[in-house]
Length: 445
Image (cartoon, rainbow, N blue to C red; front, top):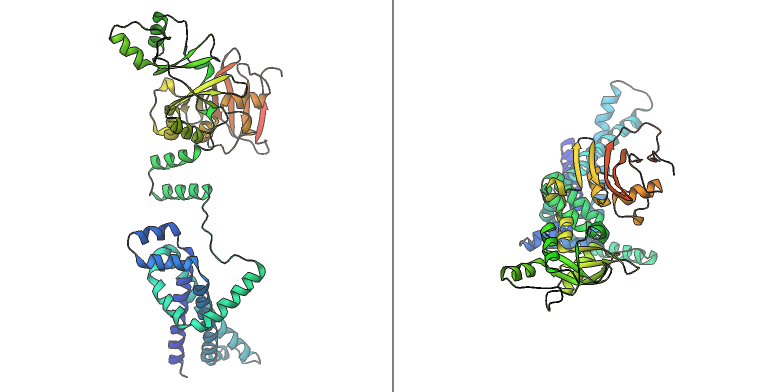
């Protein structure tokens, strides 16, 4: 066989091997979600690829038969064709007893390198660039090969199934998508420019609803403005003027005895009509929805939807009112930093590149997102930044008490009684060998 004929045969084998390698990696790497979208758009080949992914046994059998046959033939044809020519090259520099062995080794390495580069490495790298596109182009020829090699496929496939069954190994690809994978896909989409920054934040906030609990979004007990059952009309009007909320709780004697809530629009209608009113009027006070403080925000949405309410009273295990939460509060969590709030209402105000002013009631999730902190110690025991400071210091902090954590200094700058109103958060350079978490306080424990 001439060198030209041998070269043509080797080239043909390389093309066959490249085709099989490309088909193998493209069908294995194709994303099911992308293929389903292509199939819904009318691409029949995408449906064929999905069917191959669901039952890949016959496909991989054809690929392995082809790749192994090509590799064997490549060695059979390539080595005898190249060895004489390699011998001539070697003899120009060396005529010792190892000429034959060196010539064989050089021809073997040349054929192997040629197949690795052009029959395996390059086709697979090309297929990985756009696996779905390559898969839909190659699926029909692969199905044809599967038909042609059906007897061999049947033999090897049934043999492999028997071995899989014997050892209890899975034979069907399970498509299970975890929340972490969805987060990773969303992050990849944002980095690639497929998702806008606003869309990226919104999708992340949707998943955050299951990890955030009621106390992180509710109006705290001390901030609730409420009416007592025996309040006069003038008192009610003045409270509405001083605190222009849309709804107010109505209590009997104290905040823990809630009778319901009133809508300020109902009061406004009566005032505009010149009517007198009192909290005892029928239909003015609405029955409240009460929920435990252990619910997450997604459960709150479901409960509000089921009860057709958009306001709920939050009660702890001792039947004490700890806050109220509305559909607007949940929406604010969902929208996150996409909402533009007045500076006086913001819980986090950035002073410069390395310092922030934060309200003590700022939810920890918001602090983590702002500072890129992965986790806090014992996050189950508290929901707010003030709770984190008290947990770390093991006391009610005084002004200038601070905590060092994860490269940030959290310093109490505004204390009112036992309430932490405001903290100054500054970034500091962590020295080598300094512990990741530390705590210090200006006062004694």
